[in-house]
Length: 63
Image 1 (cartoon, helix red, strand yellow):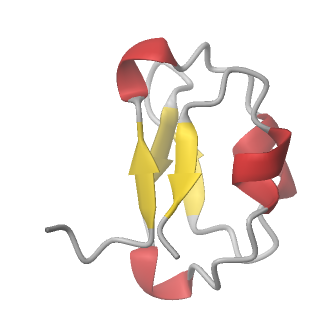
Image 2 (cartoon, one colour):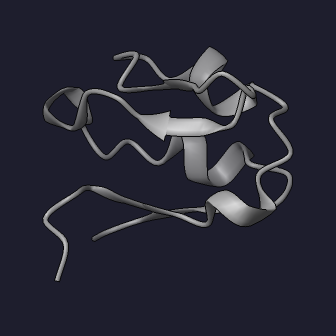
């Protein structure tokens, strides 16, 4: 079981950037292809903004 605050289905991410543009703590960012990466899991406050705004439903907040 992962202790990370997010589950990311990287395979289906289309690199739109909405998640990391909206993240208030900048816990997520884009990799070299623009796909979501949880760079700073300790900064994630589990607000759910990334999950609720992802148009491809690739981000799942662990509750």
